[in-house]
Image (cartoon, rainbow, N blue to C red):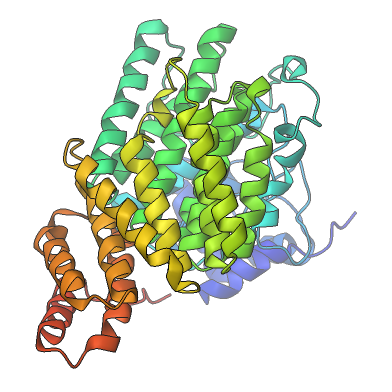
Length: 489
């Protein structure tokens, strides 16, 4: 019985410019290179895949994913191509279906396949961002019930089931591990996190993705419950880092997929606060890209998953409030912005002596001031009365950052401070701060920092008649990297 056309495969096929015969030959050639000499794909089979929705047997879906990944220069998985047997493709949808709750094997398989394809792009020097971002509602859809407490309790999770979808195979597949190995993995996360806060994501992204791929391989094996939960937490932490680093270098669709994977991994660890923080990263990405309404929707979900009964600390709730306040500020909602920032301050001062999880320890007093500064600076474009608060909090953040060694974060604070001075009509102070940023920006690989610098340059344009401003803007143009040429398909 025909399943109907596979719209996802058809859409990706149309992007490549291949004929059906060319795709068949590429599948056979790639299969042979992987040791699958028995593949004998032809034009008629390709037609049935696209027009009738026929799903080929393994390893063909994984071979197709690899072929499309190479051609399009971005990660393409078997789910993206509508080639998962457990679920039919959604007609007209380009977003992957959500992972089903309580299916750790499926989550591990998605994690391993996606990171494997991402590593292949890294090895071959192909970096693309041509896929479309999913809407905030799509990201939140499969996490809503669990985060809001409406799903079946995690204690009733389904057991692992054999015969699940196979991940992208590697020559080396790690086996089960013990406490010492997991402890080493947890330490490696801290090293990567510190590097990201200092220099930005460009130089360590591949290492983080590789480590996450290894953890996905480990999760394919059975472990004692407590150890497996720690592994899922490691996976969630690494996926957040991989997403944030991808966002930092402009790989937006890839970043979004990692944030979703992180939330799903946190779900397997039964850690709602961790999942909420991952969702907040997706919201911050949406805000950076000018999609404040969708960010606000994500933040409302994230905050629903951080009740005290779920183990959420006041510091975690404070952090989430600052991101929600940023969304309100982006929409010009002064009252909602001030109210939500007030909640953030209330939660922050209520923080207890209970040790915060490692993923929250970077949200300290400096980060709190930095977020308050960013929120007020954003609101200042709608309400000039927010300028003094933006300047105050940015100055406090810059002062406190000097003790932390987080150079990239300090640069963002100084850009915020300079931008507030531009909005407030203080060009001399703005030029001084901006020149300090330019003196240090060569030490970061953060595209996000460059984007903020472009925003600051836009604000400086109103003072272009001043010689010092004209000179500064010339320095900004020299510091910004040249736009990447699009990769031909």
